[in-house]
Length: 293
Picture 1: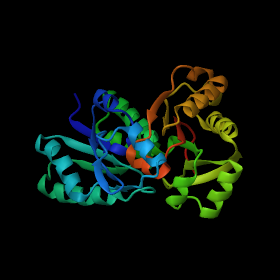
Picture 2: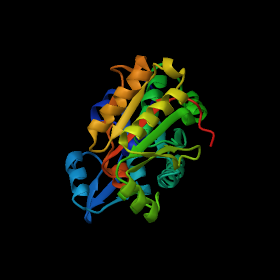
Picture 3: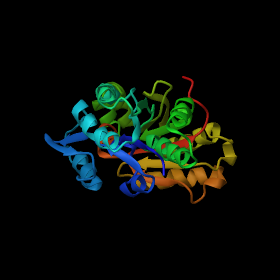
Picture 4: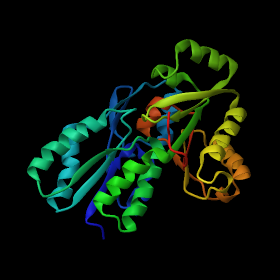
């Protein structure tokens, strides 16, 4: 049994069974639907959440504050456990600032304990893929300091590629201009985006129609995954109320990367990330070339 705790935010978008199986602890974001606040812990059924958005509900999120981080870390430190916590990418959220303030306060109270805060530079199930892999490293026997070094060296190797069939929510969040969103919708343009070297969402290419962007997404995996067509590592897909699109992407990937057949895991984009992407988003995550731009 490890003498340290691995922790992350609820925005890693795995499922409760997965977190429990891998012994990963969670700190929870919050969100609102039409002004009513909820905890991002599954209390609001995900299907109902996306139906509400499709029906025009307004969503808003709030990050974990300092007091919440203190309450999250303290029981582990009091139990004599060291803690390594990875936050949602700083390119997407400022939650790492609250985590660092809380950690500074707790280090004074528990000077004999280690409490490391690390920027995951990842989001959604790409963040989850990183967490699942570092759980493997912990189980292989890495110390908390060895694991910290491994994360900092390898976190940018988690590739994120995603597309959306509805630009409404990217426009609302300022990721896409109103004009581009209008023309994109009229022409059925689907942008292909990724998470860049700074952990920010970046539009890379535009595609006419869903089939084209699905093929382009699979091609990005072929080009960037470790070993290319021979890739046989972990691969996650997260989706928001568009399971058929996720299955279409899986089929495309399995055709060009045969080792992936039957091995790709699919998760829901959770309420925090989903508040900004909206329904109709599919995201692909795998280990591959290190992000450089």
